[in-house]
Length: 106
Image (cartoon, rainbow, N blue to C red; front, side, top):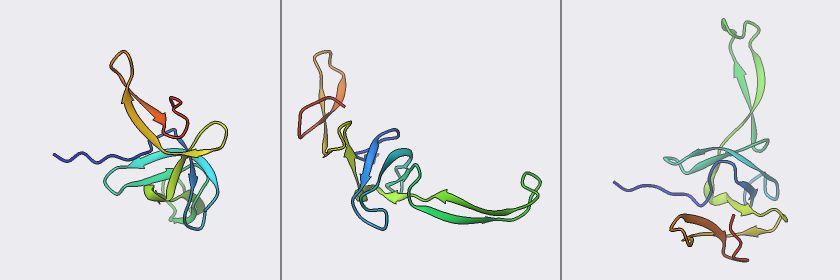
């Protein structure tokens, strides 16, 4: 019934505003609506240990991106400025996202 919604979506460029990765920017590669978390390319790397298996007979240690809560990121435009997004209907009746700061369509 209640549809959860976030201010960001896959493919958006975001800046981390809280946590260990504060101040860094990256592109969102995954969104988890249930937990309200986003995974950002190249940020919040954690070490994963994998046991030897048929696919990976050697096993080993690898670095993997961990999710960050969506409240800890903000959208970034092409100029590198942070902004808040809103949604509105355009002249054709389709919904579009826009920057509340500049009014530009994202």
